[in-house]
Length: 438
Image (tube, one colour):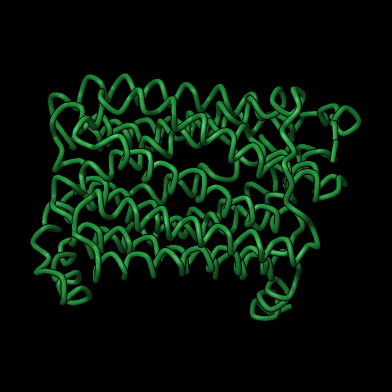
């Protein structure tokens, strides 16, 4: 069979179609997310944008804890034969309750990291980035569980489109301040998440009702919560720490460069979404199959990460001119000179993420998530401790160095752990002990 014919067969398979739809959704979100971020960087004052970046980073860390792993349990259970509706209801209820409680708790840390941001603005931005964002994400993850990523693509792009409209409205009618953007942000996120939920309900003929998680759900979701929270700290803690140590402007331009590098990883995320259910299926049957799938997918993801990272490194010096051309109506791009410098340092991130993604998913799919959690917590603690030492002394350069060091250690540890799946036995299934109260 020719290589072209093989590619055609891949594209026409279920996983191929899912990957293509997932890619379409992720690319759309990539363009929207980057556009919103760059647009805000141009419209807001430099200090306001730095505070916004730190607030969003804090919200992302909290949200990773607040969802209680409900979306992962939904994918896992549905992939193994459970009905979607009760799992969807539990995931949505958990997101709403968890993020509301988490926002109240997070308010206590506002004065430590971003005291310049008012409590009202802090709450509005946090809810837009947590409650409504994760409701839209839950809709996408329901489509992953059902292996119909076309539905997830529609819901994701609906959410993204409404957010674009809110940015346009803010640019034209807003006051150009962080307080003003907070109202536009929560309005756009609320309407967008509602659209995502309605699309999902119609596609899968399900209803959204209050259905709180059981203690069994919390117990099983806890490892996923701790893993996601550790991932959030590893990924985001440097921005709040930069503002904590009075590097407010550095938090802004460092955040833009980091966002550009991580957004470029979204195609790898699309591949991961398309294969999540397959990892759970193969991992339950034979962990060695999950490991082999991880190896095959990593060849592709690492190759992509290397190419896109090299492209970012080459393009970085021209970023101010590119921004001036694309956003000709908003400024001359001078704000992005520091961004260009940082981007050349963090251009290796796509490669590191491409190497990390699938051994981690193989561990989770094989019910070895506790091992993934231990590795993640170790990388998070390493990153946090190094940041606490280096950021006060070296500002964003300290943040870059510690992040790359921790990410590299994380990738190595994941592959060492995943290699043991070659001779591992399937873990006992929890399907019989799972409560599915409607």
